[in-house]
Length: 115
Length: 110
Image (cartoon, rainbow over all chains, first blue to last red; front, side, top):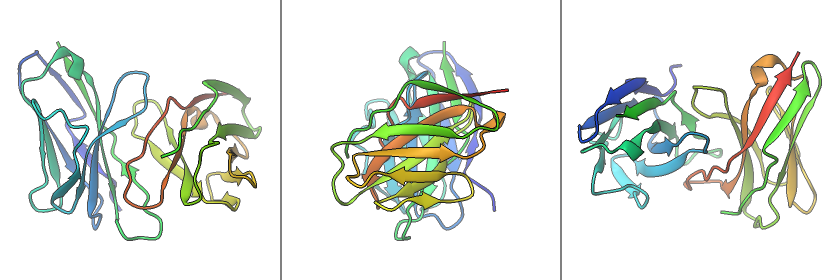
């Protein structure tokens, strides 16, 4: 069974440029998460989807960040315009809400460097 | 979600048991203890979780004290590939985000 797929794995852009990350969750998982991980720190949640609905986006910087999960399957996270401080690893995770054990499974992440 | 406290780093000899402690003194009755690890340049990997009973799976064992204020993750025979950052997280079973602390850097040495 395929795990959580993310692309690209690495991205280098100049500040003020837009960037987008894509995530395909594990098949059948209805809950999808985007986390950001700064160097030397643990991941922090940006947004959580249940199917196509964003149920927790309180930590998403809405002035420059946006996300969508239109058909309740794959998802895109966008930054426009990117700032130097956005350099981080962006992790996607998925889980099946309603299972006895709601374990989150993570993808490998996209490492973003903003110059 | 309750806060957890872990030592910043630990060393373990290859082939020996690695015992990683975690304090969670403010845990509430319906909160679970979860353990994840993150190997360099990879996403976090689920290891194990428990409520109040000790748990064991193919990766590790989880020992939770009777008062539930602390727990220990045990890797019975550590290998070099177990070198990673280990995160202890307390959360409700369903729906809540994972709140990661700084974790414990475990270095397994030959």
